[in-house]
Every structure is written in structure tokens, then in C-alpha cells.
Image (cartoon, rainbow, N blue to C red; front, side):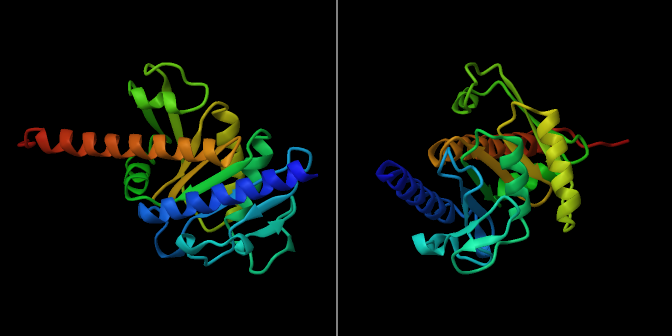
Length: 220
């Protein structure tokens, strides 16, 4: 029991530190984004999540609310955001996941819009890909699905479940012009995936813009 409590407090502390880190990077502006952790391997239905409208840079341990597998609040103050439904879909599709991070960076917003028609962002040939769990070579091709954003979270949850089934080894999912969801078997792993993917999104966006600026004018 003491071990479980220690693990709980450790993961809450890691989630708070990650929230402040994301806030400092400008990835969760205007109370956007949401973070959750599922700290007990023997109680997978117990989920702690940030409530709606919370400034992620000021997250305190008591701010987290506990929800069940249906998204109902069972402890804590505040209400879960509508996007809580997507966390539940992710946890169901990825049973090993113990933490989920959702951010709104400039780079993932731009790149998700750029590749919305293709349905995924291809990332290949970069050394930092090895920061993603299970990836051992820069030659790895990571196809990050891009879903059309909608306020219909029932439909969006269905699209997310389909994408996770179609891309069983992917480490993140983008919502077009919205943001990134990534996850891990701990808060630390989810944070590593987040940092690696956001680095790659920035590199790819800068590369595409530079490539476009260097292209000769179309005179036809």
C-alpha cells in the first residue's frame, strides 16, 4: 500500500512538473491542453486528469480530479473538459499507457493543417526519432495520423479509435489545427515522446517553409 501511494505521489509530481514545463514552452496557452495519469496498474479505471479551464502553469496536486472509465467525476473539484472522452478512448486502445499529454503548439497546429488532406504527417530520417519507445534507427518512418477536428466528441472519439487501430505502433495523434495527443507508460515516457515529436514538427515545418520559399516563382 505504501508503494502504491508513493507511486501515486511520484506520478502526480511528474505531471505537475510536465504541465509547468509545457506552459513555459508556450504549448498550453490560454488554459488549453489537458493531462492525465493512470497511476495504478491494478486499478486501470482510476484516472486523474486536469479539469476544464485550469491554468496548466499553476497546477497543484489538489487540482486533479478523479474520473472513472465512463468519465464521471468520483473525487475532486471541477469538471472534466469535453476532451476527456479522447483520453478514455486512448486508454482503452492503449492498455499499457499510464499517462496522456495534450498540447497546442504553434508547430503542431501548422503542420497538422498542412497534412490534413493526406491524413498523416510522415516523419523519417531523423536521429531524434529514436527518442520514441521501440524505435532503434533514424530510418524509422513514423506516420502521425491527422484527424479532422470537430466539436462532436462522439464522432471524434470514433475517428481516434479507428486511427489508433490503423496505426498500432504510432506514438501520437494530431487533430487538425488543434493539437497533439501523445502518451507513455509513465509521465516521463509521455514527456519524452512529446518533446521528440514537437522537435520533429518544428523541424518539418521549418523545412517545408524554407523549401517553399526557395522554389522558383510559378510563371505559368
